[in-house]
Image (cartoon, rainbow, N blue to C red; front, side, top):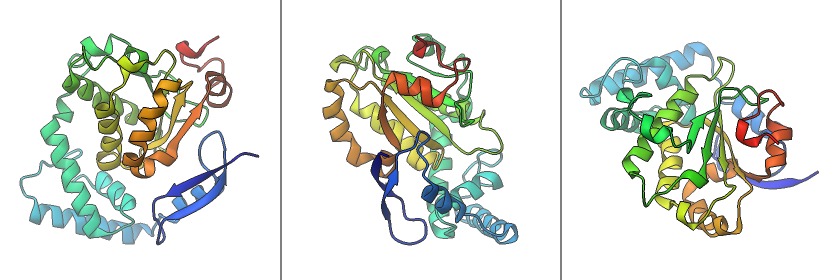
Length: 264
């Protein structure tokens, strides 16, 4: 059995560094036990949600309300879990996320507003789930040309697709699968700024929503970029798996649910 050294974010104290079996879905039994430890008595968690809600209302009156606003209890609970039920830490991270959503104009994004870039096929939300019941966000890196495409539009498409994928997450799931198809990747496709933006968005604004990232058939020219960006990805670096097209087909999808670009 293959093993990998995984650095997990602190959940019950200090960081956990452990050799874990390399499994197809990226979750060892140890990881699952740790995630289960983040649960709390519903009454206690509801009290914490109300405490955070009150703090946000008192200290950040200018923040919007409603869905994904400062009074969105579902969103508050998610950030509380991410911050291990620390009120101060949740408030700190949550108010920045809400402000970012407002300033970025997340609620204004639509199929029409990202249509021109989406039509390039450089990224899309797959119609089917993977075998673990997760929505799938696919990026075709060979169609990304940072010197020719507007970086602001790239970011808007990225956020729109994240929102779209998350809207499809089943009630009994919590995260999505990201696939970077690196077949045909060349130096003209390299974009350190965008890759950093992508992982920063997940870390700061969509915590614990990215279950795993597959880098598929990464060519030699991609390796220097990865070595440079890996330290900046924080704990998300441990979610990355380098794999082959064959492994994607056999371990993550059935013949009926496989993305078209991965069919034989």
